[in-house]
Image (cartoon, rainbow, N blue to C red; front, side):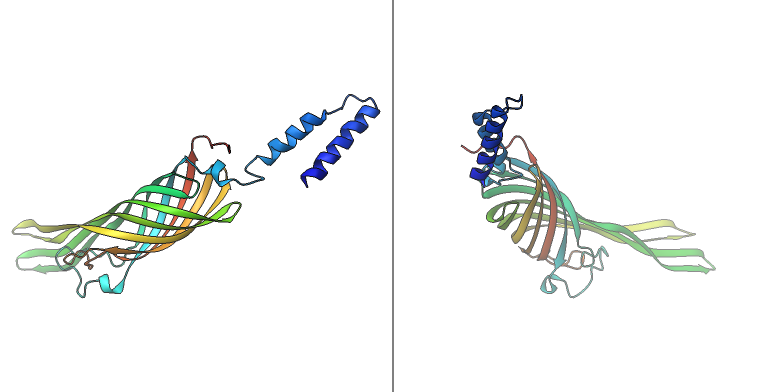
Length: 256
């Protein structure tokens, strides 16, 4: 293909010379133009040119599904928080390509429980109005460090395997409260928290839309340490899925 293109440009330049027109293109300039075109990443992909020694930053969105054996057999009747029905996480991830195939990463993500307030009873009697209920809230914060090893799939897509180590801090807070006409407002709250060490193995795929932007999707399984019943769970382990939008920072390195 290259030889045909060079031949066509040479014939055009020679033809223009014979006809003594002002559009004559020197052969050396034509060859340099083709070489420059071939080095463009949109035409010929180079992992070393586009990835090695480059930083990435991105936003992540995912799901974390608690496995059945990590759920408590009883709900959390102290704080009334429930982590078993909330699995959406969001966060940020930064990375650095040590080589064209190996990337180290650092990430943080959050799982937030909506604030819940529930009225149990409203009684109107001789002692006036009596109201009682409960409320809860909570969050999980995940800090992790890891690595990904990429395998060539196509000019713009790659498969990878990843491993991440980190710590998840779970916090649940809630309790009971109410109001009586004779005593006024009363409230009793309890807060539980625990730090879980974890190991998260993943398998994913990346696709680059432009030299500076790519998407990353992976599935994995998270194994974590145990605790007492917090929000209906004793461990946050289970299946994970994550989609991240990643942007490359800095200039790409040229192929030597």
